[in-house]
Image 1 (cartoon, rainbow, N blue to C red):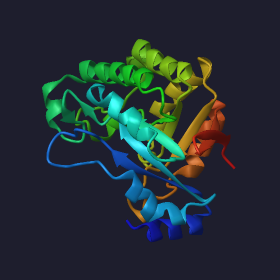
Image 2 (image 1 turned 90 degrees about the vertical axis):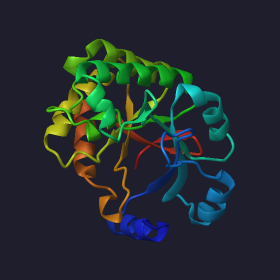
Image 3 (image 1 turned 90 degrees about the horizontal axis):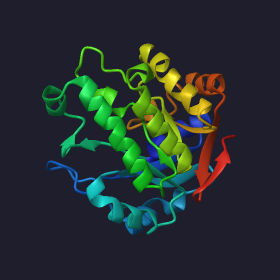
Image 4 (image 1 turned 180 degrees about the vertical axis):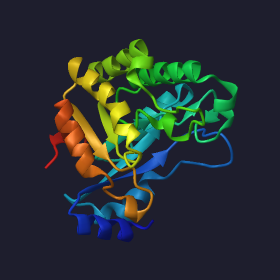
Amino acid sequence: MTAEEVLAQAERLDLGLVFTEHLDIGFPGDAEYVFDPEEYWKTYGSLRSDRLLLGVEIGMTAEHRRENRDFASCAPFDMVVGSLHVMEGMDLYYPEIYEKRKKEELYRDYLISMAREVYHNDFIDVLAHIDYIARYANYADPELAYEDFPEEMDALLGALIVTDTVPELNTRRFSDPAVPGKLLPIYRRYRELGGRYITIGSDAHTPDAVGANFAMAEEFAEHCRLKPVVFYERRMELSA
């Protein structure tokens, strides 16, 4: 989608936005997810306002921690998001990794890897889509449930709290009524452990997905007693 398309949709919905261009250094396969931050700012800087912020989503990998940290400081990003898209050198989008590994083993390693990278990437503001792996897993039950991995989940949530990293509540999968119920125990536990804040993002890649399921997400946050926040110039502020 174009910037103009998404801005028009946000105006119709009376929503603020943050663009989070993807950076995944060394991504497996032929696709490249890298960009020039100067060109990014040149292209979109004139559109930046209190209704449109500019950020980056960085793919966290052990091999590229230093490059990721350096990149996050090379432009005046409003928000830096960290995500885990790759495990064992494989893109979690494709079925090969799920065919090679049992769900219990893979999901446990996923949570352990995510916690480790949160500690090593303590410069990020937000951890994206905790349940990303459930989007594409082809297991009979792909959901990530707290009760299945309580020890690993507590370690991840603890890492967020220690590093002052805010978890995202990603609404991309909320159209499936089973998803919020599976995520609820995770965010409740985050609150029990001392977490106080979340960001809400629709992870939109098309205009019609902008702001999708936000009303449900706001109810979810209130139920968990978590305050939605936004980031301006890397400073956390309560969402209006």
